[in-house]
Image (cartoon, rainbow, N blue to C red; front, side, top):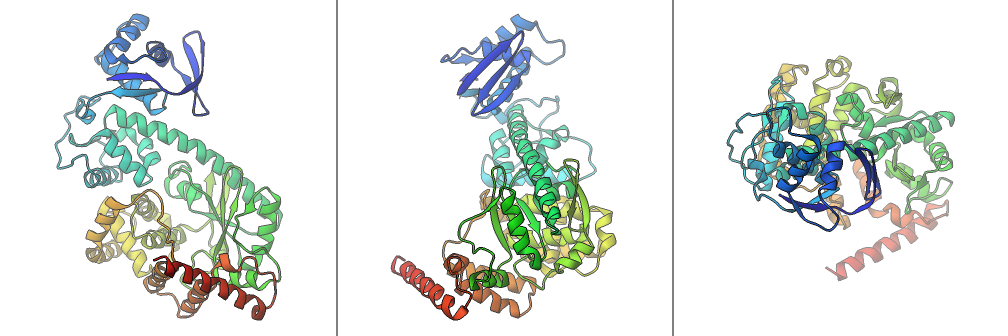
Length: 490
């Protein structure tokens, strides 16, 4: 292993400790990490033996059974993960290093390929959801980078980092997971602070609001609001409170994203309220997706007043936060996982955690839909029995998964970290239409979907007229022009 310094913009040393700035992040280094950095002068490439020699000369040989070089290498990987150092040259197969706990790594049919990495990740998550208190060992043929890439792909980096005591994985992977999780924890703390502010802002405006997904779901399902990483904030208000919520959030520093109509008497605002279900507010530290219906397909989920009457409280960074009841959270998470085609393991992990809580099943008021049952079945099949959901239900759900299992396995390998938005209207309409069929939405939802597709919000937002007979034709003309332009460029 040969390393050099990363892009440090500042380095301050006092006694045996130091502080560095990397990519606008300030990091405090331990005495050993400080000594390692001292052994790697700026602009010089230094090998592991030379760095180890300097550390031993500074602190003496280690007291334990591990070699000084192995301990130094682990510290170097920590610094690499935080971009304080960069690897110039290293082992092409670092995953074959000895286990840090002295156990022999089991062989496995997993190579350094996406399918092998995702398979290993599923195996690790299944172990963490089991009662096995041993350590899961990464297969010899899986490189540390492969596991970390798969964890990022499926948004489970903070979850793995929180359970490293049950994972026997190479030092490089441990360091990268801990460093990435630390950055996401900082983001989650900021989100939690903004969530508390947004909830209080709406409360002062006499607007009832339920938080869901994101840090709220993390607190509810995992017991730690930092476990699901970062994203945006999702709030649900009653449809009649939408305009008031819009005004309150705007006054508190968030501003609506472009392309949405403003509250008022315009036909565009009325159309948006009838056919849409969410709009985005942009803030300095966080964005808010403000919903007035929990899902786009109305009638497939209880209305706001019912959800509010059944609400629970999740403690997010010390703040009791109104959220969906456990069963409503399970149903929503299961439906959301199905909508995304079960591409991300984190979505099924959410379902498994919620289904594993006895409180979830004490508030059942309706059966799960077919797509939600598929999500539960896939979660159980991947991660094991929940030991809380009804056994007959679990068995029935697992049996349903046979028809989608192979396609889901392929999707989970091929998927990227981010959602793939449709860039043309046709595929988006077909996708949404399939959603109506999948969720068993009432027939009137088809009319709503057609209206939303014919008059998309970006073509209606600037119409200020209150009269549909004036505004609708102009929006329709813009829509027709857009479609014609796309057809010409096919």
